Amino acid sequence: MQETTYTRISNSITRRSVLKGAAAGAAALAMPNLALAAKNPWKVQGSGKHKYEVIEGWGVIPKHITLGYTHGVCVDSQGRVIVHHTGKDSIIYFDDKGKFIKSWGDEFEGGAHGLTINKENGEEYLYLSDTKRDLVIKADLDGKKIWTIEKPEQSGVYADGKEYTPTNVAIAPNGDVYVADGYGSSYIHQYNANAEYIRTWGGKGSEDGKMNCPHGITIDLRGDDPLVLVADRANVRLQYFTLDGKHVKNVAHELRHPCHFDQREGDLLVPDLFGRVTIFNKDNELVEHLGGDPEWNKPDQYPNVPKETLVPGKFVSPHSACWDADGNIYVVEWIDYGRITKFQRVA
Image 1 (cartoon, rainbow, N blue to C red):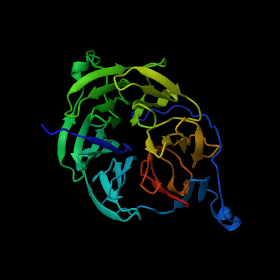
Image 2 (image 1 turned 90 degrees about the vertical axis):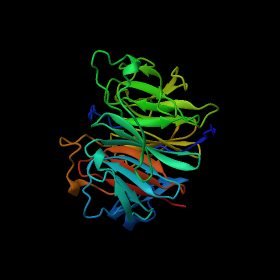
Image 3 (image 1 turned 135 degrees about the vertical axis):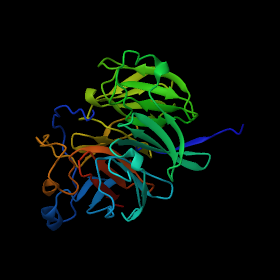
Image 4 (image 1 turned 60 degrees about the horizontal axis):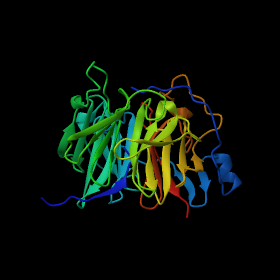
């Protein structure tokens, strides 16, 4: 059998359980002139290599598509931005200017959630989490299904009928697949590249190694050894594990309700459901908070926020985010009519 090699590209992908959020920290703002600042103080944000301009109106949605909750986002090697949303044609491709390219995925209507892209033997694949059908599906970029993972009965942890609802997926350098049961019973399930079950760890709790809504997951490649990194959302922390599930450490500062991850040039991008996006350096020290109002409060109708109250560049509910090859950031939010924002890097 030919040996398979794997190269990580990007990670994008509560029944919406949301806790009360405490407002913390202010977004770093950088405004080139007073006229622009007066028009929209959120237009330009950040500093240094993490200075961005908000591209208003990015992403033209064709008339035959009505966005649902925009839950996942990633960028392929062609620079196409891929969005996973809960309406029909749930996989949408845009070019970097926001022009619609194509769409597919009606079967994910109502359940589209996590979205991860991975390059394997020169081909790219999408790993899609479906919270309606409780499935993880691997597909090529045209939607051809490779395999499906259902509830891991062999794990033994669901013997009493406990809930299982996968939210996101991570792929290790050796091809192993890690599934986060974020909206179910808070376990992590590990499989090999052929979707064959290996092990399970975690479960609901607040002590080290336990989780409460492990909503996002990735393989952190920024250190000496790859580690499984989990967005332990309701516990408001990140947890690190070895590739075989042993707890390593926690990160619990500068977070509100972490959802998922992406990595680029030693930095970590963390979309935070409670109204901002955070960037950490390789030592998980704060670099920037983007789009986050220090006076942020959860509206009564959250996440059904009236469109007229939205301000470009000011976030309500970031659910997933990723970088492209040029360092631009794309953010999608948990809002019932969907929202996609491009932060264009300022050279």
